[in-house]
Length: 204
Image (cartoon, rainbow, N blue to C red; front, top):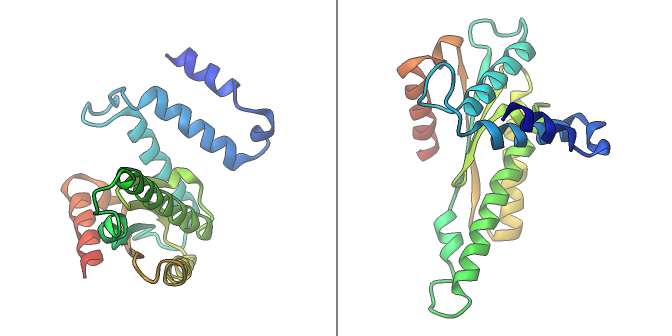
């Protein structure tokens, strides 16, 4: 399997190897393909891919936060699109031969919105794609360094929500919650409580 993984990296186009961001995306995809079904060496409850990606995201944030916030060097950024159900099903409830296509198309559109929003946040924070831990069902989670760049996160939120007002008449929008975290917050039940608090903030 490891040999196949190395061979897949060799197939990355030469032009993409010269672009670090593109190369990282290729590497991440290959890593997911070969290691997402392999149990972590530390616990069988998670895959080796998830373990590696989480480790990289945490390490990246630690390095970039440097001396700025020793007590709480991390920012957990939880994004959530609201109005998804109304957006997907509006005008598509009628029984007709195109209803299924409409629903699939709008579901894909939500996935695309979520991915693009996460990429905008990563870009604003000058972070690689590997800092995104989760992106599914209209939600995403990013681990970022606790620096002055946090203000850029809210600018992205305002920019995206204005776009949604202009293009969807406010039918959907992006909610963002940012919470500081210490190293100890990533262990055991503490991390679960932190994640729960993020979701509660989004529901307000």
